[in-house]
Image (cartoon, rainbow, N blue to C red; front, top):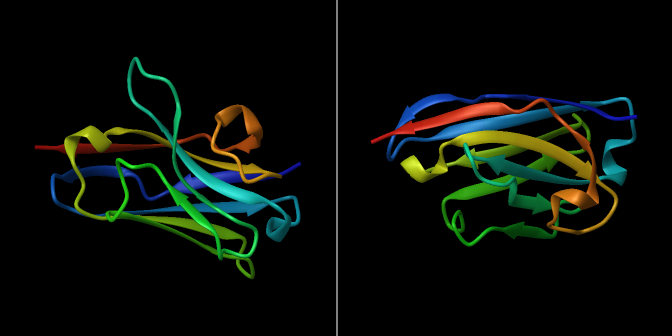
Length: 122
């Protein structure tokens, strides 16, 4: 079993930056594909970014390309999401997720954190 704990969310003004962190425990971190998803009120949970086991392969949703960066540190069992140039549309609960395959659907991820709220004001 893998436990995931997110941190770093909060309120921010449009154009600002936040860095989300996800700490993993209880498993072999380097064997998991890691991803960030987000869910806005009344909307489905969608992928934001995904990173492969080694960190060499990344995927970004079109809506965040060029603004967000996902990274991981397998020695520290952490995955980060650097979010720059934030927009009000980025407001959502952000979830860290771990899975075994390079997928972008939420159904393909086995372990989830509790989520952290990001609120971007205009």
